[in-house]
Length: 429
Image (cartoon, rainbow, N blue to C red; front, side):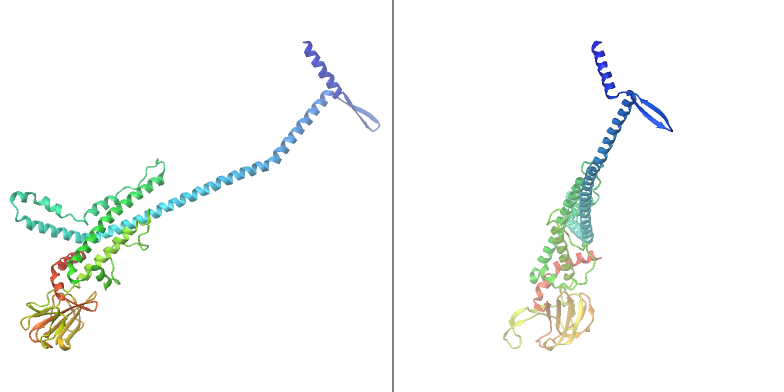
């Protein structure tokens, strides 16, 4: 208690010393008044002044530092906005990348589907042919074998062209949806696009093998004529006006995931075009026997001239027969000459398009005129002995790309060529 009283006394002494009681004297109209200001009032006013000063300093500090705080916040907001814009650009770019890949895959899908549709008639016709052949063979088997024959026939009808169809259908129906809760939706979509790409490549590979096999079979069928599909394609007269066929994207088949992943589809399209061209060109092949009844009296190539008895080159095939024997067009075409032609006598020349022409000489009678269109096997004249000849026969020539060819290999290839012709005619129908 003694310590407290000492402190109180010191505070009281400090108050009286710092804030002594003061009086203000006021004089007005000869009268004097005074106002007494106690120490407590002075302390109150001093406290108020100190509080006001502190408030002023605080507000001044806040005002002075506000710009820097606002500037700092603005910089932070700008940084966040820039990050958002960058993320938005990245997302847009990735979204566009996924969309472009999906569009390219869709164009590939349309190409494969149209190619399969274009091959479907030929595939069905081939299946019917195989089934008919299998049924004919089954006529010779035992009763026990006949029981299992339907299963064997069904299996043998499957071709390289049939397998891609069901596989591509499964690829087409494959769901491209992604679960909403997936951690990386874009990654999941890209994975599905890659899966679709692999499916399409597999189908394209099967179709490529099938088309390449067809080209190989055509080459084998005409190998004796010393021609091949590559040579025929160069002279394909239908290349400029051909319409229809599989869908071909305007920009071709650009890469989607790998730099070379479009080459397979481009090769498939090129081979398909070659195969279709070869099928059309084979319609111009002179494989129909040009005489209804004949025997070969002189072959193509080096021989002794029947009149001068000297060695010479014979540019055709002589087919001897009875006078008036029907002379037939070896392929559909257009008559470009009909009448007398020097040593050929009465001669008909047909243009079959795609670089092929045929000549029929020494005829007794010409039954067509220039400009006529003739069908395969149509009668164009009668066998005779006009012109430079020693007897009744047909002088038959085959020309391709301006050069005369041996007709016999064309006639010998007739069976294989006609089989291919029937398949393509069925596909066109």
